[in-house]
Image 1 (cartoon, rainbow, N blue to C red):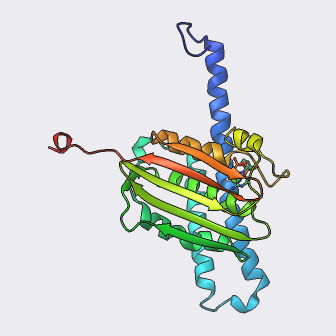
Image 2: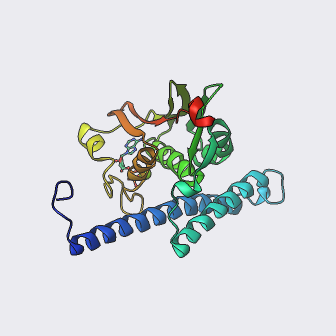
Image 3: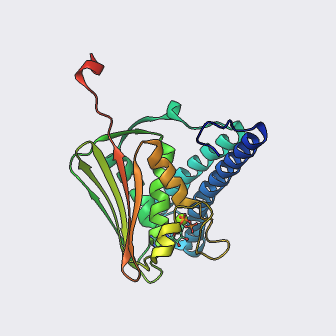
Length: 244
Ligand SMILES: Nc1ncnc2c1ncn2[C@@H]1O[C@H](COP(=O)(O)OP(=O)(O)O)[C@@H](O)[C@H]1O
Ligand SMILES: [Mg+2]
């Protein structure tokens, strides 16, 4: 089915459409879940530390909550308007700036004893993509890395420039994956997390993001050693003749 000369029948096409719709909706709800997690943590911090209220220390917490609310609003608009965020909403992303802009949120999602390091090449290429999808890909990878280190460890987000490629890698020193788990990890709905903790939609969305940019997402993992998920994203070459 699919490939080859046989036309896809109307019924099958409807089923495929429904499946795509279900996956997309599940993906959106998954993103909402991530953002709501951020908001819940913010509120918890304020709640647990009354002395924080009214002090300067409250500012980053509130800023992160507002940022997350902004993104949740965008996602809700996406559901309501049923807008597909495609190439139409792609924009040039300064990767160093974008990651630096997420740093506070990421640090805050990875409290001690998880230590977060950003390793960015001094010069990074500009990515042309949807900002929301970029941020969600990073967020998904960092949350997975954090979840893999319940006892703490090192979490490294690196971005490096290679010829014609941007390479983004998220590494942890956590539980790692068995070969069987690593082989299944990109499948939609595959999760090893308890109910309510995992949806199995993070990595499929990360891979979809990479593929939409004609890139790839790969896993290198060793049980008890840790995991690195690497995105290879081609940078479009602008030829002189195109620019003219
Ligand atoms: N950094 C990681 N370390 C160990 N296992 C991981 C890591 N990232 C992903 N996994 C495994 O891949 C599965 C699928 O990940 P994902 O698609 O993000 O879904 P979820 O996080 O909701 O379970 C996880 O349940 C886990 O088993
Ligand atoms: Mg996940």
